[in-house]
Length: 251
Image 1 (tube, helix red, strand yellow):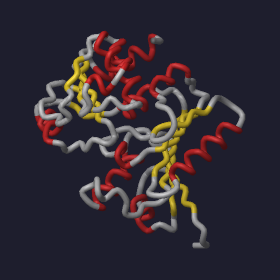
Image 2 (cartoon, rainbow, N blue to C red):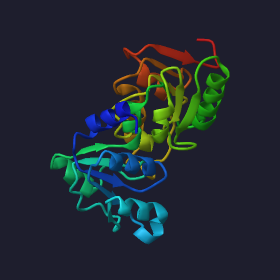
Image 3 (cartoon, rainbow, N blue to C red):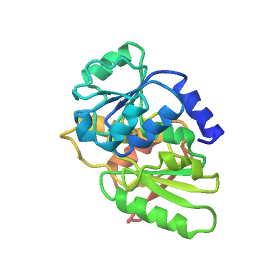
Image 4 (cartoon, helix red, strand yellow):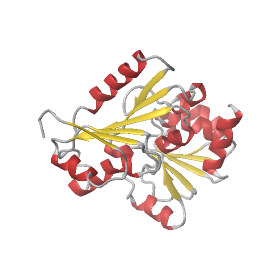
């Protein structure tokens, strides 16, 4: 692991024991990175170690502990990496936070580590298409390499070591990923907001609040959103972040 990246990860972790909630595709590079810097890692998952397969076996050989009951009731670690599909208000997570633990995510760590320009795209409709097209536009321009990931494609965390300041990282971000995100991409787009995933969110207020996290964290330099969508227009009125509105109408 390059020294600069290793130091940034160590600065983020600060020697704390780490819980990784869910050994999904995006968290496999994360567990490798945490093992590389020698921290104590526990993976919590509803699947058994046998069901998790070769990655679980490999991580177990590196000293990773597995808790496979899936209820997250007894999290003892100080830094908790939440997978997007796991609600942050589960009792075990809240209990750990009340005891001084910090809740974070693989995406939060990526935004801390990435040297490339970051473009974050969310919305109730059209975010995959917009992310894909943004990646193609940037990739066709002169300059560095463009990486596309987040909620689509491959995890980008382990690709940080190959990125430079002249590269671009284009991220599709779902409301699930955004719920406890503290940092923002540099350039942000919200396609629209309409009722969505309300079987997972507690209601529309929580869903909108999650979407707002894409520009409310540290780092946002430009926000692009839909003038024709009343909800997005209301979200961005009065912001200090430089704003670009798009519309199919004359206003």
